[in-house]
Length: 389
Image (cartoon, rainbow, N blue to C red):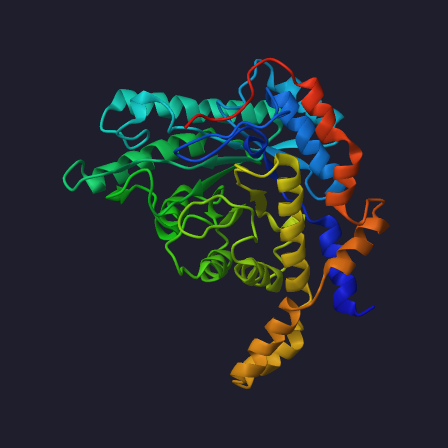
């Protein structure tokens, strides 16, 4: 076994990929939500399903919550339930886009009363972090405008900065604010946090506990996401990822399904700088909606896709790459990357899983477990979790 292969196994053994609680509920498009049998009815059942993903992959030990989708009366009890399932509650995601008051924005709204309402929600999310032991508060704002002249672009940035500063001041010593950006939608003329530069500028002003989070589906077609990754890494401002895939816009398809080579290129930039493991400070999370495929297998397959891209990135011959780059050997350098990308890493990952006491094939093991049939039978009645469209 080569040194690169052994190092890859060590890094992969420690890799963690956070799951989104909302991936286990019913979801869909603007046109239709397709209900599935056996989906969770509350956050406790969401955690139970997430634990299945971790049981078969060994790499998904934390679950992100979305408030108020995952609101409960006792968050400490929810955290204890997660611990009983051998997982933990991770990132707390705020929601300032599903209230009638937010039609013209939330933290950037021209009405101070609406901004106050949105801020109160964000501070509530920090309270939940305290109760669950969560490190990260992730903020994505749907704020923006649809028409020229609708509002002052500069004033909206001032309002955003003011709210962010208040929330930042509320964070504990070991807590972070992760600011997410998105090119467009639902606002179509201006979006208040449209790109990594805007997010970076706000985080830089806030301080070291504010970091940028990259959603891989939130960019214009053709955007070189790995360049953004490299730059934010260099500046120490890359806080995390929302992994998914896109063909056109924010499709939220399974990570690695539309462009697996892009995912490899992103992981290569991270692996080069030793930023893949749990000590990197980077939160790796899935953010997907399984509209037509079953929820738990969709999450298992997604975790496996990230593992495979990571394994290939870790197998890049970095010495040969550096030598070719220094010599200006364009084709030689590219060939080093392509050799790693074209490596079949599935046997390596199967071997690693067996060494960890896991099934070599997580998808087959889950299918044989009978869990899917069990939850379909057990979860009768009540209101299935999900969002309407």
